[in-house]
Image (cartoon, rainbow, N blue to C red):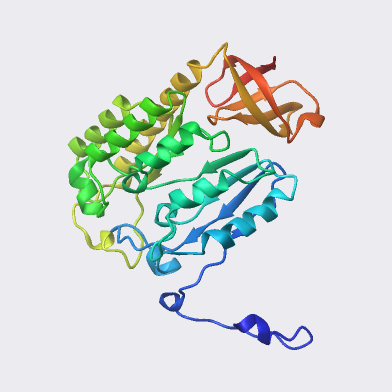
Length: 321
C-alpha cells in the first residue's frame, strides 16, 4: 500500500506498476453533478475484441465486494444526489471470480435509502440476463433504460470483431426488454467501417437496426488503434465510405429517437430536473427522454409528473401536471 508511505512534507514520489499486476478495485463516484452521480462498480475487461485496447490499458476485470460497494453507494445517498448511474468497463462481469454477481448487487442497491433513481450505464447483451430485466421491471428505483452495445448487425463482422454473441441473441435481448417493459428506452452502440465491412455487411447492419424496436444509436466510426488485431486486417474500408455510413446511421438514430419520443406525447412521465439552459429547465424522464420546460431553478434536483407536449427530436417540451 503506497498511500501509507506518502510524506505530505516531502518531495514528489512517482509510483508505477504494470496493469496486468493490478488485481484490486475500489468503488468510486463522481461529485461534479448535483442531481446525478456516476458510481464506478467495476474496471478492466477480460474480453479480447479485435478493435479494442481497453484490456491493455485497464487490465483484467475486477470489482469489490457487494458490502464495500454498498458502503460507497451509501456515501452517495448522503449527498443531495437523486440518481446513481452504475458504470464500469464491463459491468456485467461484476463479481467475476467470486460468488457474487451483478444481479446480487442490483437487488441490494434497490433497498438503498436516499436515492430515487438508479441506471445501468451499459451492459453487454450476453451478460444482460432475464432476471436483471425482470427485476428492473418490478423495481421503483431501477429506471426503464438500457444501453446494450451491438457494434455490428453482420454476423460475419461480429465474428471478426470477436464479439461474444450473434444477431439472434441481440434480437432476443431487445425483444425480452420490450415485452417485459414496454416503455423502456434502449440505446445501442454500433461501429461502422470495420475492416472487411462490405456494402452488404453495412446494409445488413442498417436494416437490422431499422427493424429493431430501439430508441437511439451511439455511432462510432472505426479508427485504427495500435496493438490491436484489427489494425493488421486487410480489406480496409476507405475513410470516405466510413463517413458516409456513419452519416446514414446518424440519420437513422434521429428517426428512431423521434419515433420513440412520439409514443409518449400527451402522456405523463416522472421527470428529474437537472439544470437550466437558455432560461428553460432541463431534465430526463424515467425512460431517458430529455425534457425542456418553463420554470424556475427551485425545481432543480426534484422529480415531478410532467406532460410531454411537443417533440423536437432530441428534446421534448414538457408541462407540469
